[in-house]
Length: 490
Image 1: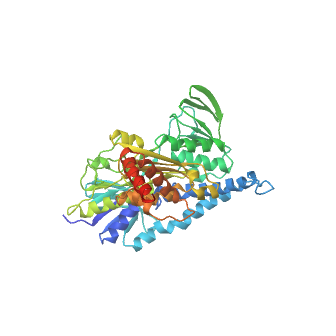
Image 2: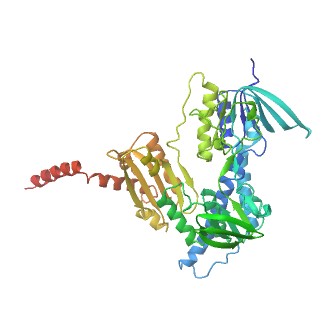
Image 3: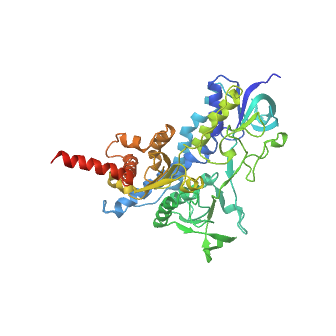
């Protein structure tokens, strides 16, 4: 059978854009279908707007800090122009948009269609609501050898009895508000809740976070999440844990936190309690593709679905839902879909870092302590306060730590978590080290600029090395060395 295209990619977020880019670069005939905005979640609702807001909020806090530290004599007149804040957010999106635009991808040789995709069979896709030249809507069917689904995920709405939908916002539509919320209630305690909660608090909102678990960022290392928790509390964010029996009545919410009754007033509710996959209305009933209870598509190690000709990439597959993770997975999905009959590549997620962009940031790579224990790996754990770094002291950023897990008896790195200023920028050294199968001795042998944040990476390697000298075998060797030195000067 002859096909119109080698590959059809559904969704123009990070996973879909990179898939289409790679497919075009290797000279395949590729069609990219997007029903909404090019750039997907990251550009329009996620990374770009949130990090812009976080940066502005950090600037506001710094202007207050210089007065509190006695550096300036007059208190700053902090009156945030929220419309201007949101304009800056829109400007950032607009400036980055051309990189993800229809025009750019068409110039790269990608056949971009704006419309809604429905999979009709393992080798055909119908596109409906296609914009025509005269503005009319049409539809078309594309036959193809392979399909990549990259439709992402959307925020999950928690049902709260009595809560009027007019108060509810998510990470997708919070960017449409025109006035700064006075009293923001956040349902959830993950990365989005903590990032946006801190940012809106710094801009002047009174923020309350309702966590169902016993701590915020409950999937992260406890020592690391505790630093973020204490920082938010110190800045004025109210955090309620083990929340249950949540009900609303007009603009009041009642709930139990640690079995204590609370009543809070709010004018805005931000739902930040996880996501669900955008797999509905895709025509999956026309295939044997399997999904889980959260509407995520199940894939194997090659990013292949249960339908052999169809692959999935990015947030739609669940797991680590980050832009760079989707882009990383896109290489495997695209190469395996186009060249899998010759050679296939298993995706390796072991060396993928991620960060939570609170202040201080939390960045992580590799296994957690819980995962290490579950795998029955013997390990050493080394911890160093972030203020052991001179540059952190100079910059008055002394809040945080670096924590390292290494395989016992070797210098192999199993996992690293860093909480500190610009922690995300400290990750590339660990990515390289783990990717190249190098160890802590290699880190120690690398010269680092003084003073720089990156020195903390070498410092913890040094602390690990010092601990190794305490074992009996090393102590025996050192005793012989000491005897040799003592003998040489007698």
